[in-house]
Length: 318
Image (cartoon, rainbow, N blue to C red; front, side, top):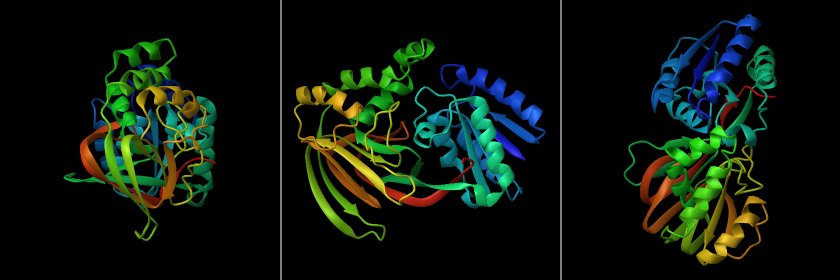
């Protein structure tokens, strides 16, 4: 049995068109399936929990949606051992699919999902996930792409309800949303000082850093976020580590000129940028900064921990 969670509104309505095509493919495949359509923010989380509670010992759950829908599903999953995840991208960013080399071609993506299904449980490819917790949070939040504080988090928060994003999506330029909002935000945001501990897989501290006037820190499970910005070009979701990219101590005017190098993945050796891999990263901030997980707003925090969950998610992909 295949269970679909569908966000028809993702990609400013593109999700509806893609779902109609996926339905046609599912109908002609001869596979039994059930579809669940999201109706409000947070609904995908509830649906994922509901599906995971089914008696089915091998749940094949296919997400037809964008990065936000994917994150809600991860947050709602309660039994990773009996669930295999497939995804057909419909969003404007699609960093999760891009990072895993999932085809944007609907028929190719669907065919790949079916092929892995037919090969059985052993054919699923396991990937790492990340988990972020912060002082006062009721429950940690999982993420597949990235989580972070500062500039990128503020931009993600603005993009969630941005009319600019809706407009650019309609003219197929949705990726520009994050670049334009980044430029706008860069000169208005306030920096903070960060004390950071980098820990290995056993939780042992192997490095400590003080990041003065920190602009952002992004804990990357995949190499890119924000519509394809390669924050951590060497991030690997199979190595049991997160790749933390931080920018700090850089005058804002100079940061503006660093943006082209960042988008071109040429920032690793620039003064004021630091990329370190760790199993866990703990950060305390001198003042509250905005936190996101996979582009979803988590709040304003001063104490936050990012942790790797090795080989946590089983994917229906080759």
